[in-house]
Length: 233
Image (cartoon, rainbow, N blue to C red; front, side):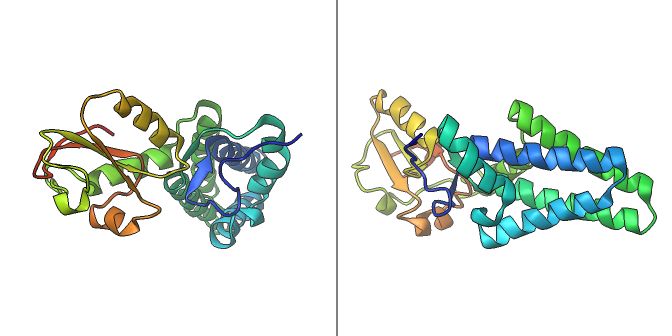
């Protein structure tokens, strides 16, 4: 079966198929749970090592990712694409907790190790089954705290917004061409009377850094002087 992909699984690493993230969480959760049930700290260490390898060398070296993109995605198609940074933080947290669980077990603190691994198993399986990713939510919370707000970067320089043209209110979207949520916001905003100005973070990473955009889509209503009137997303 031939499947048309919007994003290349190995090259377009700034976005991620949401199904791939949930599949990876499912594998992580099952391995962590197996270690809890059977007392296998090596399972936690190996899963942590696999996550490290995937984050360091790329998805093609991550066994769950390789399985998803070569076996599952070709049969069921590509899911929605999201910013890859929140799932990446979730994987980094998985590395820290699973590695800590293995270390605690080998240091003799078996009860604490089991509790830490059980927490990983619960959160990972929750993400796989419901889509709620605790690590991703922590990333998004941090992004909101770092991003444009009343106390931080409450104005976008009109010089960075070609097409503003003194509009009383305009919408500014920091977007990515492969982001499904970004495309949904663009369709929604296109129906509104206010001008819509798009800033592609792939083409303008300098502006993403300048305004602390840690996740896309990021959508704001701005006034004629670039003052942020409202955060929409």
